[in-house]
Length: 133
Image (cartoon, rainbow, N blue to C red; front, side, top):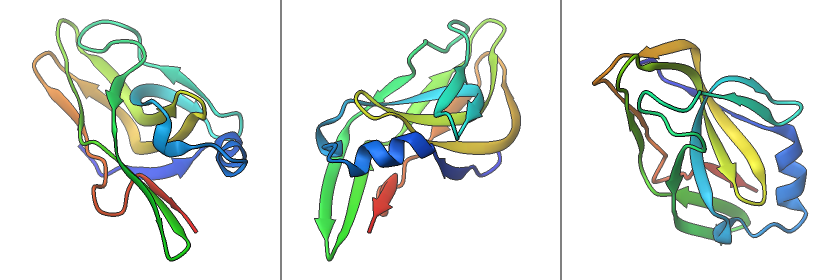
């Protein structure tokens, strides 16, 4: 599977900077076939064949500020194992219970996952899923 690039959803940035407490949010990673960064919306992978609507929960490992930089580190990893007909996705989406869709990793093209294959979304345990300075 190719390396994915991280992108932010524009509407979430304002909400986070207006005083959201990211360390107390309930977080999940979802898989999607489409995203609109400007609108903050996604087309989530259909339920079934190893994927459950709403994605997988990830917990906060740490949410700290040091020298003026806030860093959110989430548990690692989010994993899915395809079954039946499998599924396809292009984006892994970070979603907060209050913030909504915050950011996504773009795999560049549709990724087909056949029965028995596993998708693992590794979250950066050193630099966090994002930093705000």
